[in-house]
Length: 387
Image 1 (cartoon, rainbow, N blue to C red):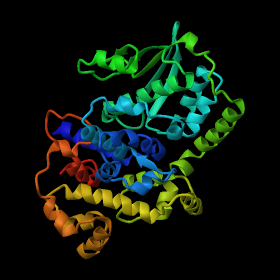
Image 2: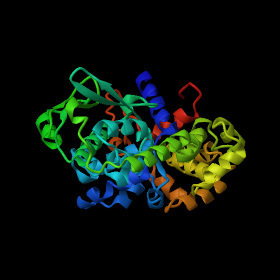
Image 3: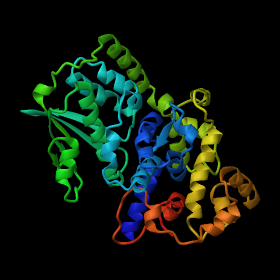
Image 4: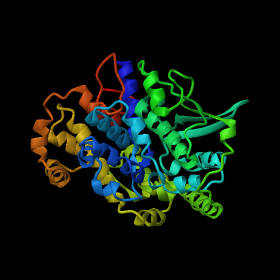
């Protein structure tokens, strides 16, 4: 039981986190998915992301929804190597300021510096570091802010694949990589991975990352543009400074609502104080988005509502009160605005058994018991104890 408790609390940490992924990055992956005959909008709907959100260049998909989306895509496409293929889709359109700063760099070494500096603008779920060794440069990636085991191995493969293939693009060469390392197990597919990356691949390594030849770092880039590089660095540095209060403001507010359980009694003063902003500054920051505090709270409530509905033991009144509504009728009115189906119908449908594979979007295999989103509400509403 202790094992189950710890996993549920870790899952709650992921859901509560403010981390996210640029919508432009995710949108750039859709053409490949469509080649498999899979409709992106279907996956978005299953992941709880609206098409208009992905079309909004400023929107950042919450971390747990991005994880869910990738797992759903791999399942729908039925291709275990999909993350590597998706990495090849990474370009300047997908990476925006980061991408343009890299291609405008004078050489590969400077481009790597820009990667370390601006990767947060694409996604802020990892920490990228470079280490100069005696005969090579090592670039490593590790998850930050959330338990590493909650980051699907497919996410790690997508990150590394994006690095490598974008590097091949800007250098116009497919050499210079000494080896690629993954901390997870490769399932006996080393040869296939090495073939797809065009370099040696090592699994069960001590780090996730890439090692490059030192002489490859000085290779001049064919699209080097000092003026563009300076401009992108200036803009990128300004966005990094205002990351929490501008670029990622919607996810920051969403995380505070989750963490402080403000879906019951949403107060803009409490949210502003948690973000170290004045109320007027918070409202001003949200003016640049299509969101208000109320709309973010409603989105959090909607997500929690579906989590609660996964617990067949909860009735409509129970769910309504847990979400901060005054009663069942008020909740039903709000739910009918959220969902295509009625709350009563959904409540009946939710009592049907669901397989764990349908609920687990994080790629974690539990050997001691089955855990899914159906139990998340218990963790969200608990204060250190499980009922």
